[in-house]
Image (cartoon, rainbow, N blue to C red):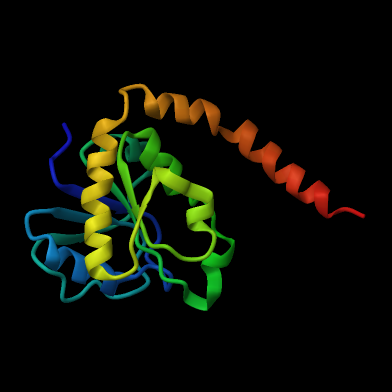
Length: 171
């Protein structure tokens, strides 16, 4: 069962993960519950009471875990201009397939890749609004939206698009 006002991040917690943004955002949304799962390469210290850090989860456990939340988080910083090339992180597909709204920072190519299926914000106040709007957006989607999205955006399409892009580079 989905917990109302609940947000999750699943993935590596490296230099591109904007922990400060998430801490500030959680402080602005005290009625929300935030969980971060993943391999940690930075200290998860000084977290507000509504933000919890957890270890990694097995890939097989991701669907059941995501089913408990209403919003998936992509709080990426543009460290070393890495986001210039990131359009749709794998977690985006997982979040949409699980029926979650998606709140994401707006760096590089992410808005171009995810379009209107995510809600964006780079400051704590804007990211907090993005989370609330993402939850409302997900609630309005038809029940079969995730299934249709997966069929339309599965690996055959993704690999075909990647191949097309590579072939366009050939002389």
